[in-house]
Length: 112
Image (cartoon, rainbow, N blue to C red; front, side, top):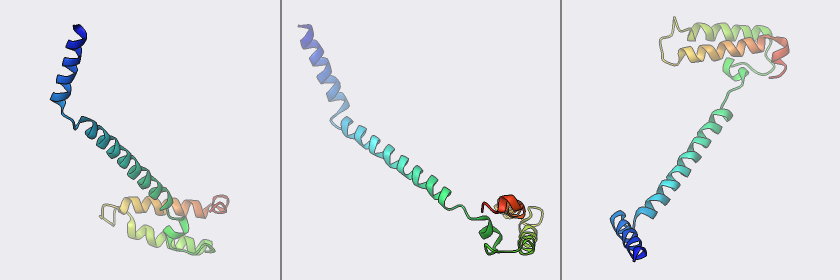
C-alpha cells in the first residue's frame, strides 16, 4: 500500500513539472558546452593575436638600435596618456614601453 502512494506521489510530481524538464536539462547542458567553447576560442584568440615587439614599434626584425629608439620615441609621444586622451592610449603606451624595453636589451632582444 505504501509503495502505491510513493508511485502516485512520483507521478503527481512528474505531472506538475511537465514533460519538458528533461529537455530543458539537455538544453542547459548544451548551452553550457557552447559557452565554454566560446570562452576557449576567445582565450586562444587572445594568445595567438599577441603582436611581436617589432610589430608594435612598426620596425623590421632586422632594425638597428637607432631605428628601434626612433620608433619608440615617435610612438611614445603619440600615445603618452598626458597627450592622448583616447581610452586605449594608456594600454598602447604600456605595450610600446614594454616592446622598447625588451628590444633595447641585447640579451632579451635575441629571444624575439
